[in-house]
Amino acid sequence: MKKLIFILSLACCLNMSGQKFNNLALTPPMGWNSWNKFACNIDEKIIRETADAMVSSGLKDAGYEYLVIDDCWHGQRDSLGFIHPDPKRFPSGIKALSEYVHSKGLKFGIYSCAGNKTCGGHPGGRGHEYQDAITYAQWGVDYLKYDWCNTDELNAKEAYKTMRDALYAAKRPVVFSLCEWGDNKPWLWGAEIGHLWRTTGDITASWNGSISHGEVWNSWSILTIIDLQKDLRKYAGPGHWNDPDMLEVGNGMTTNEDRAHFSMWAMLAAPLIAGNDVCHMSKETTDILTNKEIIAVDQDPLGIQCFKFTTLEDANIDVYVKPLKNDELAVCFLNRSDNAVNIVFNWKKENIDDPISQKNFNFNKNVYLLRDLWTKMDLGNTNDIFKSALSGHNAIMLRLKKK
Ligand code: GLA
Image (tube, rainbow, N blue to C red; front, side, top):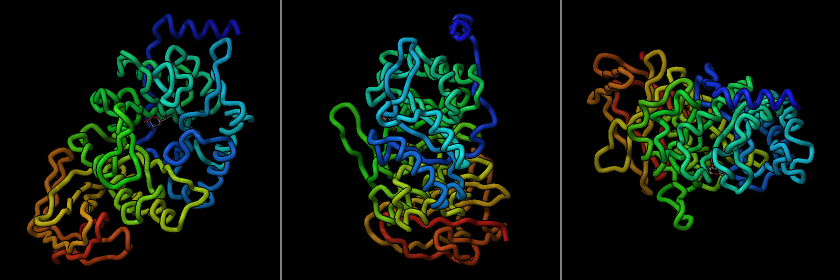
């Protein structure tokens, strides 16, 4: 124990500087997190069953790698300040759970908070950063989501840096997810500290608008969150991602809405962290979450976030473009409205120029083949005018490659 106290004081008093773990999250992290479906109603049985279901449902094969326990796993700190899990909900302890998750070929993640208490009122990390980082390393933690409740006047950048340095000092590589909700513009300073940063408040499973939770906070719909990503794309790239929050696929929206939500998260190069009950997934939900061609757009190694290219006249259709490797591109037609529309898009009249990625797509110079990533059908080429019906709250997602 004396040795441990010595190491801890060395770390704190010598103002040990650190860095984030490099070469992690070179494509947007993929996994599952307990919060969106279960909130605080979690226990080790749910987590074990979820690990099993991530494998049997095909999620793991599709690329979902991290299983992350969100808020409310905590018990109390002991007399030396070490954190322990809730003994009733996690009687076997977190290390045993992490070993189980690892035995399934998955990685294990956990949640804490930069403040004195988590958002759910459990012990936060403030003042215990180095001690918690050592505990997490002992437990085999591979991913840490670090929240921003109860932080008083803390400086966000410095608070997250402290935890980053603590994780680095503990020497077990951890993907560090900053859950600061965008309040202090983490896209301006997050790249050197973490691997992803939340850009907005909490997501909710609704298409449009927001839900108020009293005066303190709102949760945001799919369209609201998409609109809030405007202007942020230049800050994201391999190893450092904008995080528009976890997926709500399978949590109550219509199948069209889920499909559009998943399409746009892939276009945004967003972390794909499923947030549904994977033990009881419908076929539609499974098909959406495991659509490998959509996932490949998200996971494209260039890591270029999409931009809104245009809005189609007389229609509520936004056209998003995401440049991909090998001079390919993804194009998403997003129907924001309640009504079905007929899309008519003449490629030859468009010149798609992206000053940020310095990519240009000129359909008069080059002919591209089209593939519909939801119907999995090849649809001819860009010499033809693209025409398609699109129902309300839905999206068409195309991948284009040179003929
Ligand atoms: C905040 C976060 C959520 C979730 C909860 C847990 O609201 O933004 O994603 O982690 O806390 O209490």
